[in-house]
Every structure is written in C-alpha cells, then in structure tokens.
Image (tube, rainbow, N blue to C red):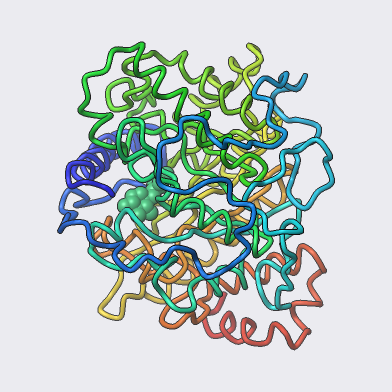
Length: 486
Ligand code: XIL
C-alpha cells in the first residue's frame, strides 16, 4: 500500500515538475503537459482502498498459477517454463526480428504461467468496439485501475470492486496495463517480500480475455516503498535489490507481459532535460550505467518481451526526447537490449500541442525501436458538470485523433494505451485540481466524442472511410461526433 510518505514524495516530485516545466516550456517545449498545478495539495487520508478486494478478478482458469501470491520469493517463478535466464541477445538488440507478439506463433517464446488451461482464451469483440479494430500491428489498451490515487482518496479499486468494470475493459480493449499494482510499493512492499496478488489477477484476467499486457514499471523515482527510499543500503546492496526485483518480476510474467516499461521518467523537465540523478535512487546511488544492467537483466529473464523507456513531455522533438534519443543510441551501440520508446502523452488543453509528435516517433522508429503511446489522456478545465467547454472537448477529441493517426502512420508504433476508463476513475481530477474530462467514457460508460474519434480513425484505417460512414454498427458514434462537430 502506498504510504503517506510515498504520496507526499510523489506530490513533491510532481511539484518539482511544475516549477521546472514552466521554465523549460518557454525555452524548449511548446507543449508541456504533466505539470500539475497544486499537486502538492493532494491529500493522503489513509489507505483503506483495498478492503473489498476479492481473491480473483472474477475469472476462473487459475490452473496454471505457479505459487501462492503475496510471499517471499526471490526465485521468480519456481517452475519457470522455458526461461533459461541467459539467452543470448538478438543480433539487432533494437528491434528483434521476432518480437513474439501474443497470439503469434513464435515457437521459442516462454509460455505464460497464468494462461487458462488450453492457452490464452479467444475473445469475440463487438463490431463497434475499439478492440475489434486493433490487431497485431497496434493494440488498444487501458488500465486495470486501482491503488495509487484510489488508495489516497480512500475509494474502492475499480478493477476489483466495481460491477461492470472488467466487462468494459474486455469488451473494448486488446491490451491492459496495471495502473499501480506492478509498481514497487505494491509488488515489493517489504524488503525481501513480494506481493503479487493484485498483479497476478490482472495478468490472469488478460489471459482469460485475450489481451496483451504492458508491464509498468521496473524502475522509477516515484511510488517506491519507504524501506527502499529511506533505508540505509550500500550501493552494492542496492544493486542486489534491484537485480533481484527485476529478475523476480520479469521471470514470473515471462510470456504473459509483452512490453515492459523498464525505466520510467529518468529525465527531468528543465531546459537541458537533466537526468534525475537526485530523485531516482538507482541513478543517484549506482550511476546512469545501471540502466544498461536493468535492460540486460530483464532481457535475460524474458527474451521475448519488448523493453521500453517511458516518459511524459516527450510528445514531440524536444530537449527531453533528444536526451532519450542520445541515450538509446549509445545503448544500442553497446548492444544493450532496448527495444522501445513510450510517449506517455498526458496532454492538457491548457498547453499547446507539439506538431512534431509523429516526427519524434519516426526518429525512434528509424533507430530500430518500437514506439508506443503508453498513457494518453487529454484533460482541460472543467465546469460543475465535470466537462470541458464544447470547444475544448472538440479540441481534445482532435488531439486523440492526431496522436492515434501518428501512431498508425509509424510502422512499429505498436500500442495505444488510454490512462483511465471513466472520468470518475482517472487520476486527473485528484492530481490537477480543476481539470478533468480526460478519458473516453463518462457517467455509466457513455461514449464521448474522444471515444468516437478513436473508433472512426481505427475503422477508417482498417476498412476505409465508407465503412465507418455507412455501417449501422457505427451509427451511435456518427451521431455523437456530428453533435460535437468533430
Ligand atoms: C499515476 C496513477 O494513475 C495514479 O493512480 C497514482 O496515484 C500516481 O501515478 N506517469 C506514470 C504513471 O508513469 O505511473 C502515473 O500513474 C501517471 C504519470
């Protein structure tokens, strides 16, 4: 469970982001986004959010579960199938020839230990759903919401506690990510103790509903447990702790998690995009070189998983994305198995949109990397009805469309994940007071214009324009977009 200290640390980090972004934005970035006003105001009223969590997320098929959750293990999965731990790196570490996408037929891939008997279950998606129009080339995802701000706000985790939530995810999305459950403070709450209960359940759910999983995140400066941040470990001990964590978590989910955010948010928001060598315990204590090792350890434990960097405010060619570009280029030259670059894409209508979004993805693609839109939401100032004004709503829909189009245009942009289902679940209102309306659904899963532009863009991309414009299946969205003027 996230402690109040952790929450304060997160708020402080966000606040720092605010101060530096406002300087950096003028100099280098027209489109800063994740820089919350008043994030320090976030309250931390105790941590009771998980009280009602059932043991499983409502699907059976646990036959393959390797061991009991919530314990010990530094051995990863005891029975880890087909996971030698020392496999050679592919010749081109940037983009493996065989990325081992799920549902694919790469014979050497580890078998997911959380698959129901008979393997991952097929799912028959409705014609008007987003997942019906995603494929191996691009997965459309959302989060298994829970932990983090839900705990801080003392509310129930939607993934485990809300009727209809899981059904909605399965009906609309072909990919899922643990919003918080795979972060250190959840999965590694005490030194030497791992708690996989929630994380396992999400992976089982994905397997039972034919969804990919984006693993988030193996190393970060935020949402770390107190025992780590406030512990008194030598650099050598820290290195051992990190290696154990990475190997344990990645091996457990080998064959289940197709993409990992291996290093999250390592650069700052200052004009020079300085590496976070104060806030990030790993970089501070072990030096930036440790990143090479983190990627190598993860790759050894699951050679088929695609290993990503992930950050916000890299939504265009700017100082921060330049910093990633240089870092990755050097790593590829050294043979480090880095495979992907993720742009979180937390956008706000209070900032501009950087027209170099696609160009930025393209340059990482040209390096031989996969790219992904990993956490998109588009927020804005809201009124009493929790909605933006009509103009901002239409503008937000256009941004979703532009970003999705960019991803579809870039060959190896292989997933597009929305950060939140209903507005009521989103991290935005609690983190950016006064802002909201950032997701695709509102009320009781009613579709917003943002949903409908994504549907339209995917269908037109896959089937051509006539289909979306004429097929009765898309009538609802045609009406919503017509009314919104999008
Ligand atoms: C957010 C979660 O959505 C919240 O529940 C939590 O309180 C804070 O973290 N960048 C990331 C994500 O990489 O992990 C963050 O998720 C949003 C910003």
